[in-house]
Length: 467
Ligand SMILES: Cc1cc2nc3c(=O)[nH]c(=O)nc-3n(C[C@H](O)[C@H](O)[C@H](O)COP(=O)(O)OP(=O)(O)OC[C@H]3O[C@@H](n4cnc5c(N)ncnc54)[C@H](O)[C@@H]3O)c2cc1C
Image 1 (cartoon, rainbow, N blue to C red):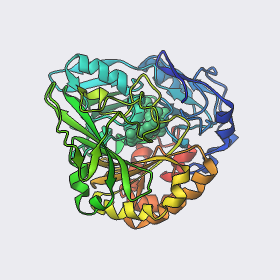
Image 2 (image 1 turned 180 degrees about the horizontal axis):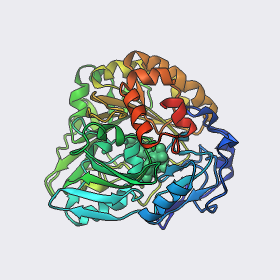
Image 3 (image 1 turned 180 degrees about the vertical axis):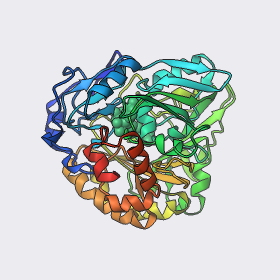
Image 4 (image 1 turned 90 degrees about the vertical axis):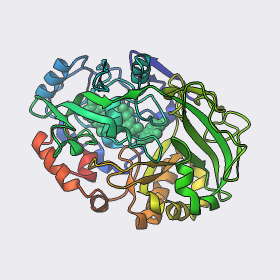
């Protein structure tokens, strides 16, 4: 497993030759992000310490110019003096969404955290990592409503892509945003809030970096709570036919893991909200699955589970249980590619069975699949826009050619269910089809016109999928 060093909020990721070899990958969903030298601007900024590839080393950025502002005034200055640029978080996306052929602006220097207890909100800098934000607000008695599988990502990167955890009643992370502050193409600071801008705010949160550079976000918080995690093994897929919603609703947040073989989910992770110090229910079986006899890593019994958050029903703070992986360790596997599709929850069982027909093609290239649920929301580009969703996720081995071949096959199987791909993961669904499932695409384009009429923040990925 890869060693990941953390320093000054920036990840310093060990470059290895395998990562370099993989740089050619990933034209999926971003095709010619490549080296169009069209965007040659003046040579501004200095070549920085920010690695020139994504976290997993499977996507190589097409610019060496990276600004690293430390405050809002510096962001404003960079936006004003730069012809084209893209905001960058912690680089955990798997496609060209954060790429630029001109310049990027790494926002990790902006990591202020200010709780407003009266308002039940926290105002935080765009670049603060979820894990650091969590520790700070927990100290003051507060919590976010949910967390994704990893706490390592930046707040703005998380909410810009509709990043989610699980839980039948939990919206994605972006649904907690109350106000967004960003520097638009005019070089001015704009604020949009849920309360005062109902016509535009739902389009501005999951905005894929297209409206401008987010500087601060105000996010809902709630009193801190405890969670206890209980893991079961070997849940038959047959149980999902009549009980999918019950199973996914059996705890505050539920994840199923599978390798698609043997008609089963290999693991079921139940994250129960518990009153402080109390143990969760821990029957020895759960819909026929058996209580795990040791701490498990999602990829399988044989994998080292040290990086995973505590299991076995031991209660602990929300931020040390809701993610699958601890902040201090490399999340997931490290050398990997990810793909994820959202389908209507009510069609979830059929969608699972449709993908399962490809099991003998999928399994050899798969590290693990995760199934989660997300509550419906009103954010235009959210993968759960107006539909309670089942998310079918694939963590792939870094086998680009095989993944490249499999993705269209999976998309064809899921086509009857109008799949919405996770914006930050690898997919190949064409723009016309995306337009049908993201029904507010047109309004989103108008919003982009308002804040960025000349395409300062547009990149090849956005041109290919939505703009
Ligand atoms: C191991 C692993 C596990 C994951 N688990 C989950 C999961 O459980 N659930 C899930 O939904 N996703 C998951 N993801 C995907 C991840 O949540 C997204 O890729 C997320 O966008 C990463 O945030 P980031 O800070 O790395 O953003 P980046 O990848 O750096 O950027 C993503 C997007 O956000 C934009 N952006 C970043 N900062 C700003 C800003 N200040 N202003 C405007 N736009 C900005 C970028 O321009 C880009 O469009 C996982 C990824 C990895 C690697």
